[in-house]
Image 1: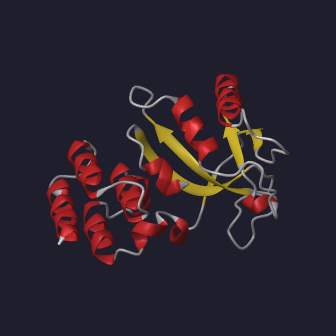
Image 2 (image 1 turned 60 degrees about the horizontal axis):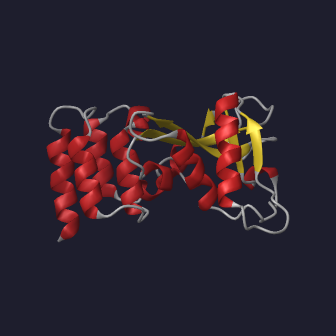
Length: 192
């Protein structure tokens, strides 16, 4: 889901992690009662919350019973307005669905970022691109929080095309000096 949401114009950051439980500082190996989740930050001037909610409902099988709380399908809302929009998106998406719905709609609680090796999973497999990003963002958290990393991760997970990636990188205004050109050069080499 991280890569899928990162492909949406207007989504500025994605981060995988854990939420919904009571354990302090969970880890992948010691999760407690948390659920794996994706935190999404977005510009409401470019994408509406209802569009993100629609994507959530259309990108998973809400009738699939989870094997554990760790992997359950859930959406965590921060406001009553978000809850309303999530419910409306559910009703639109599932209007013809028969049977049980197991996807949970829950109030948001503290979000704990997952370990670094879980962040931008598809992108991390691309060593050359990670080298370019590491030069642009020496701080690893800034790298994984960057809109550039979100778009590149989406590309390598096959959620956007090379043309969409090039356009997204060209329009990002938070890139450090010189980074845009290096990233675009690296993207051009992917086409060859």
